[in-house]
Length: 367
Image (cartoon, rainbow, N blue to C red; front, top):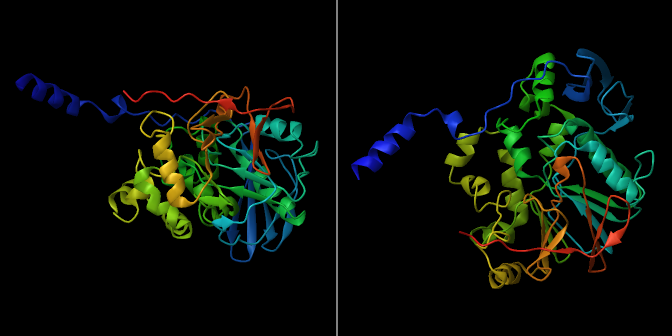
């Protein structure tokens, strides 16, 4: 016993960095990044970093078009602040879903083009159908900014065509906004230095994308399918029974320091690293068997749950199509897949545009 106490004492003396990933050092140079667009009264201030220099432009804060400078390559139709997103929608004939983009804009664009979600000019071509992104655009990769603006733009274009784009928040959105920067690409820490703000402040409530993020859901039900980043654990079923309230609680907590949201009993269940909707992995590691999954579905009146967060080689079916895992490891920058749900039939779209059945997932034993 004395030896165990002594070991624990020595462990307590080790620095925190011995157990956690450290925030990376900023890059030395930024080739291209932006725009970051901020609201200030009745004006918009757009800022880019091109060849490590800051460029700025002011516009009136009305629906307006912002031409590209560097970074995102297309003109942007900037809109007034978005309304809070809905939590529950009726069934639609076709849904395409993807998750865990992690700054891999080029790969996302190629995947959407190959599967005719967008055209060669990156314009929406899915008509009245629906695209769902199940979280985690932030961190790791080098083109986070471009990925956000693509999704922001596609949401407008889809609405005009009678379709829809839904972005569901992931754990990395909450992490960046509460200043957990362990996984931020060093490029963006340099961008923050040059722009004179912390990286979370580049997505503050005064920014166009930051405001947009603060209106996005964590739980999105479309017909009999629930989309979210991590999953619904048995402990969190109550959160999914009232998705509108849960989404509102997440939206209100975005940007509050990590220690505060975890200490507050009202928000702690939203951020629990093992059981919360943005972190849960129990469908895949043996914590929850098929009977347990079915119990969750029955309580929520669902046919299936679609999640990201847990990386797979392919879009995969678990527990007899009750859980569909759509994190196809886009974050590695090499390959990615889409999920298609068409009148209840499931398939996956590959990077070459072909369509194949879902891969069969294998649950790993929980040791």
